[in-house]
Image 1 (cartoon, helix red, strand yellow):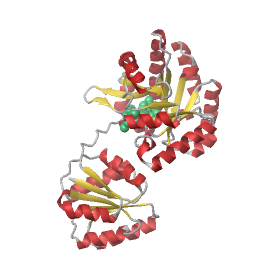
Image 2 (spheres, rainbow, N blue to C red; image 1 turned 180 degrees about the vertical axis):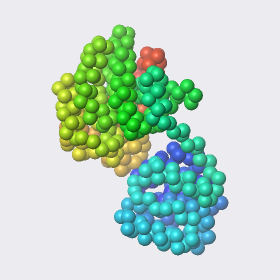
Image 3 (cartoon, helix red, strand yellow; image 1 turned 135 degrees about the vertical axis):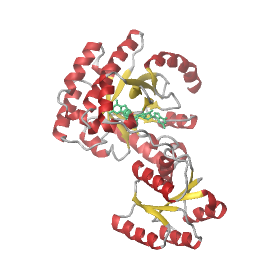
Image 4 (cartoon, rainbow, N blue to C red; image 1 turned 45 degrees about the vertical axis):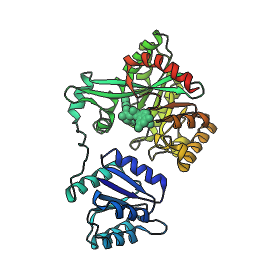
Length: 397
Ligand code: C2E
Ligand code: CA
Ligand code: CA
C-alpha cells in the first residue's frame, strides 16, 4: 500500500515523509509536483490509498490536481496540506467535498503528528485496511505516579562525542519506564502525561538523582563524563529546583560543572518571571544550560535572545541528510554560526550514517550525538561501549 505526498518544497516533503513513516508501515512516496503524482497514479493507482497534497505549487496547483483526480475517478482518500490561512483552506475544503472525493480534511502546515495520525485513522475507516502500526498504549497519571514512586523509571545514556577527536566527553540521560507488563516504555508516551498531571518535578528529580549517582560511579572508574539531563519548562516554576540540584550533586560527590540541563519549550512558560529567576540561579551555580531541539517550533531564536545558554543542540531534523539537502545544510550552518557568535558549544543531534558523520566533522560543529555513534543504552553498558568505540574512533579520524 502506498501514500503519495505532494509538495514542491523538498524540505516540507522530507519532514512529512519522515513523520508519516513513523506512523505507518505503508510506503510513503514523495512527489515534488502534481505532475509527478499523476505519473505515479498512472502506473500504480491500485496501490495508492491516500494522498497528501499541497495547495500552493508552481505549474499545477493543488486545486487543479483535485480536478485531475476527479477526472481519473480516484476514489481513495485525499488530504490537503497548506501554509495558506484558515479561510483559504476552508474554501479549498468545500471545493474538494463538492467533488465527492473521499476528502478527509485540510491541515495547516506544519502538520503535527496528531493530525497525521488522525488522517491515517480516517483513511483506514473510510477506504481500505491499512497496515497502521498499533497505536501506542496510553497510560494514566496514577500508573505513572506509582512507577515514579516504585522506582520503575530507569535512565538510559547516549554518548556525546567530540567531532575533532572522536573522544567521548559526556552522555545525555534519557529516561525509560520499565513497565512490569509492557516492557520498556519510551518517554514520548509519558513525559506529556507527567507535565499535565503535575508529576514532572518528581520525575525530573528521580532522573537527575540517578544520573548524578551514576556520574559518580563513572568518576570512580576513572571516567570523567559530563552528564546532560532533560528538564521540562515546568521544572522552572519549582523555586526549590536549583537548591535541590546543588544538594543532590553534593551528596553524590559530583561537581555542578559536570551537569548540563537541556531545555525545550514544549509547553508555554506558565510564569516567565519565576522561570527567569530560577535560570539565573542555576547559572550562578555554574550549571550549564543547553537549548534542545533547536530549529523546531519549540526552540527558537526568541529563547536564544532571552536566555543565557551554554550549548545549542541542533534538532536532528536538520542534521540527518544535511549533506545531500541544500535547505537542511543552510539551516544547520546558520545555527552553528549563530551559536558560535553567542559563544555557545554546538551539538548535532541524530547523525545516522557515515555521510552524516563526515559532513559534521567538516562543518566545525563541536559535538555529535546519534545512532551512528551509539543508541541510548543502560548505564551498565557504557564502559563496554567506550572500549568498543576506541578502534572505530581511530578509523573515523
Ligand atoms: P531529546 O531530548 O531530543 O532526545 C533525543 C531523542 O532522539 C532520544 O529519544 C534519542 O533516542 C533519539 N535519538 C538519538 N539519536 C538519534 C538518531 O540518530 N536518530 C534518531 N532517529 N533518533 C535519535 P527518546 O529517548 O525516545 O526521547 C524522546 C524525548 O523524550 C527526548 O528528546 C526528550 O525530549 C524527552 N525526555 C527523555 N527523557 C526525559 C526526562 O528525563 N525528562 C524530560 N522532561 N524529558 C525527557
Ligand atoms: Ca535532550
Ligand atoms: Ca533534542
